[in-house]
Image (cartoon, rainbow over all chains, first blue to last red):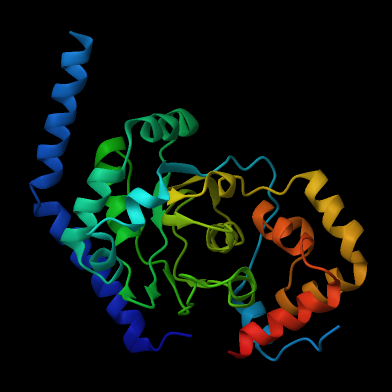
Length: 43
Length: 247
């Protein structure tokens, strides 16, 4: 069983991941590239 | 048959498995070698969010995303990651994967449900995986979920997370994993495999199993049941599980 401290660490990581990905431009850039690829295939 | 181990009482307080009904196969994105040999895999497993992001963006596939979309149809389940503390630290991959899927598929992400025990499954044999099941805690606030993990092996962790939320009134529509072996994708136990397991090891082992884990053979995953069926005899199964739990 995790200690209360370890559970708190896990919940903190949950928040860190959410915050990081909310401000990361990598995913948006990836999605743009993906859209470009799909459009070029359709075109 | 070995005496039911002491850990059984604690496990049974938290472990739930629900009927398989027609639970769909886990949608697997990438080959195991691509993910586990990737330079970003180890840091991502140890909690590095940026590494996890890079890994997921390389490994997630359009084909698997299409399958998830087709499976959920018009429904909008909350994506629920297996958020756990592992050998290497807090694994950042499943939550990051869920967040990225959320953006790609326009689905909400669940929060607050975590794995409440630390199990060392990476590189462990099947008995150890069975002896030390992943257990979950937190508030089940949503009515529909779709599970997300970095890896599917025997499928026990996903089965236990599904059991945790379904035993609290929610429904799990399906699951996806960044990687896993193809034969691990099928979680729901086939009649044939169940018959084979019962036929080989009889009811005595199943009674022991219920006493130890609180659920019957019909709620094992396909891979778990096949693994147990391969054992020489019922006694060796109970002995190996008790020994693995004591390690």
